[in-house]
Length: 74
Ligand SMILES: [Zn+2]
Image (cartoon, rainbow, N blue to C red):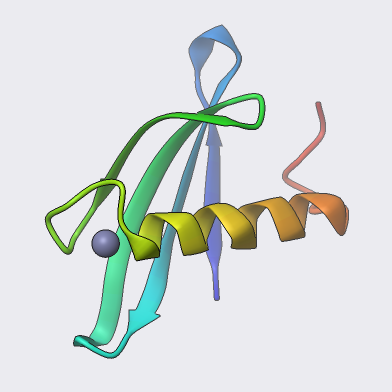
């Protein structure tokens, strides 16, 4: 799974990714706004937030972070 990470102002970070789902062949596009390790905002294509897909994206992001993702330089 591919993560798109964008730095925003005020130390916030935007994380975007597609989460596979049984309900959708192409998966759901999820976007999270994080401040540190805390989710301050988010949106999911399934129409509800928070939802299982946003939790999944958060976990994937945290895992990538702990593995030393090159996007994470702070
Ligand atoms: Zn969702």
